[in-house]
Image (cartoon, rainbow, N blue to C red):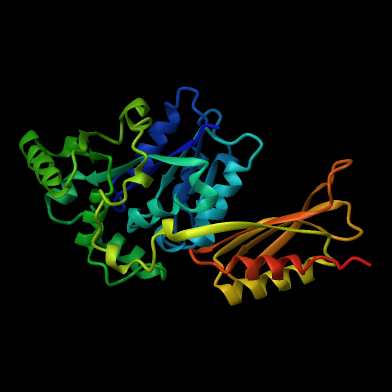
Amino acid sequence: MSLVSATIITGFLGAGKTTLLRHVLEHAGGRRIAVIVNEFGALGIDGDTLRSCGIEGCTDDDVIELANGCLCCTVADDFLPTMEKLLDRADPPGHVVIETSGLALPKPLLRAFNWPSIRTRMTVDGVITVVDAPAVAAGRFADDPEAVARQRAEDPSLDHDNPLAEVYEDQLLSADLVVLNKTDLLDDAACAVLERDIAAAIPRAVKILRAREGRLDPAILLGLGASAQDDLDGRPSHHDLDADHEHDDFESLVVTLGEVETPEHLVAVLAEVAAEHDILRMKGFAAVRGKPRRLAVQGVGTRFRQQYDRGFAPGEPRDGHIVVIGLRGLDRAAIERTVAAAALQPA
């Protein structure tokens, strides 16, 4: 099975990420691209802009907005369930492009691609960092510093102690390609200085391209083949020591269980297991006694939701399977024993 490629577009507010993304969609050349936009607050301006772009083949289902804070801080709650839903579609996309918020740290998002439910199905084709050339030349990082300050104040998930210079440098350090945008507003000498400074800040050979209004051929932006999730050590961050854990420290197991009495009983058991064993994610299916349809269950921590999704096929066993994801060192036997006990006892 071929892996679905993902491209991460990062950069400060106003650097031109959405403009670049829209240009990619307008010149997709038949590629089936899904877009995840990490907006914050009640009004998803970027998501609405992309949905209303009128690009042929770009539907509401292909533009997904995550509005619950910075992606790098809400990976388990928002990003992973969204990616799993995309991959589980009957017609999964050929490529996923993720536009992060202006104050996002890219590396935690890269780590998320090593989660057990994602790493066997996706690869990070590349990280593209968009730089507002005139703003950086003026020492501001963003053209509208007040807008950046408002974004920071309004998003409670952000670490407000992160200096903007460190966020900017982290975005560069994760890059496979740097797009120096709005270069029509600078002369060649100023652009050359920026290119030299950016190259010196990144301890790897990274291509730097000049652009006006994000107008770059998608063939250059997509297909980098970086497998960035496998190169975390080569992308140092100011915040590496702040991480509680690396995502390659996770493990997963699958528990099989027979029919259950009620959805409420199953969810109560799963929530108890999640609390006792510090489980991060659970997902799967179960058969409920007397119900012709399969019960789909999703859990983040101790919070669960469930719904009946499809009928059991003739002859299909009426049993369930629950995937459990947590930090390495799970008490697998205890988890399997408790979850399996949620099934009806034989008469």
